[in-house]
Image 1 (cartoon, rainbow over the protein chains, first blue to last red):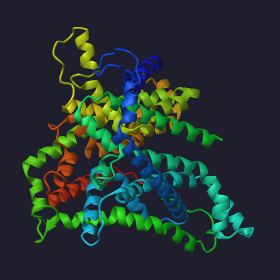
Image 2 (image 1 turned 120 degrees about the vertical axis):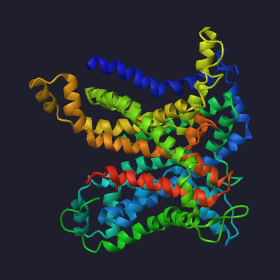
Image 3 (image 1 turned 135 degrees about the horizontal axis):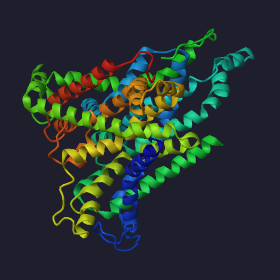
Length: 252
Length: 286
């Protein structure tokens, strides 16, 4: 039984990891085709020379950084507020945002923005993408931070209050340091969902706010392009580094 | 829902309300207002070029009963159900392996979570690279002279299901692992002492005790699979039209926003209905 499970697990892990591994290996293939020829960096050079890819990567980074910062701060405050006293309304709408299919979130935001544009001289662009990203990553932040608050000893804060701290002082100097690892994890999660999102972003982005996933998607639909393997490897590698860094940070 | 214990600290209302305000405003803008707009749009008439016009109508909802769309709903259900079942069947032994692997548990668990942190889009593209006519699998089989013409591996329902299972397997393994890990081993020993074979123990002891994990995993996989857009578009090609693709199409190429809005509401109603149907009191994320 145990041996059987171990053999099975090897296959399951292979299923989970080999496809990405193959993608990474073939990003160093000199041939345009899916047959190994020789080792080469040419597709990485092609990526570096592609203005479209570079510009969209910069857009993606700006959006992810701004949206992560906003969602992390706002979501942490909300988690703390909900921990003090629950709010069925707010929990309900956050839960709703987690279970709403992405495509529905996307089209309904598009419908809202188009309706607002009837009255205001605005267009789809970075701002609409950032607003959408803050909106959908907020619930993730609240869930992660609230989970940590559940194991928090309420008397610590009460002690701070008894010793003369203001309410905000007790939050800022006692509770917040305790929450730091969860806040870092929440920020990581918000960053990854933001940098990776295609479905919602493609609906609310303007012509001048193409993101990396949008460019990757268009390239993938068009067909074989080894440069795409190189971009993918860079993105997966970049996100992997970020996770390792955040783990280090969390343990330190 | 969090329940407070012990006495309340004095005068915490103001700070709490200030802290909740930004989230309240943001969810109102990015969640509730869009939903309200969708409800209104679903009751209006399609505009001449784009958008919506008066008069009010319920025609968008009556159109949902058209068999053309009924088939798309049924196919989406079918594909999501197959993907969820496969995730359960493939994920259960893996979760069991991790739960029983002692000190190396955390390493094995992070190997499951790792793909979750890498891009979903890239993971879907990886399968395009493997499955397409000029992809790795077909190239290898042709080089080995096993086949002459490439096998049609991509752009069919099988490829969509494969992509969904690959994408959502971690969502199934995590809750299963959480329940299996808490399982009291003495219960399994008791079953064995009383003469149960390993298979009997699995079916009559382990599985029933894992019900909460199975339920959580099934929900976490089924709902996103039902509304999938990306996987079916990239791996299913133009042949695989599921609810998600249908909704997207109404808001882009077809320019029928009111009908797209009605479809979105139907999809949400199904998702929320399912959540309520399998809900277990005392479980919940928020």
